Image (cartoon, rainbow, N blue to C red; front, side, top):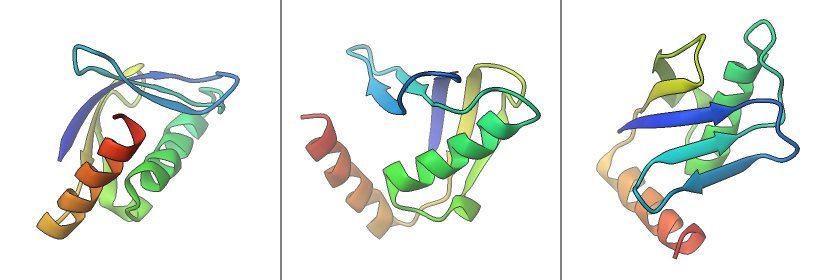
Length: 90
């Protein structure tokens, strides 16, 4: 699964937002210093999607707020993620 995200580091709270147009914005508490925000983002996404951090990779945008992220999932995990999204974003 490939996601295109806009990431806002240094926010007060962690927040995963799906906008009405389908775009995704992620706010994270960690500051964008020495790659800390990217590491934190991977940890946060692993919690949101309930997959190990090792299954998530930033493909593009290491030094940019616009990121292309890959999450390696199988069909069963994909179904689980869709159900989780339906609960989080009715």
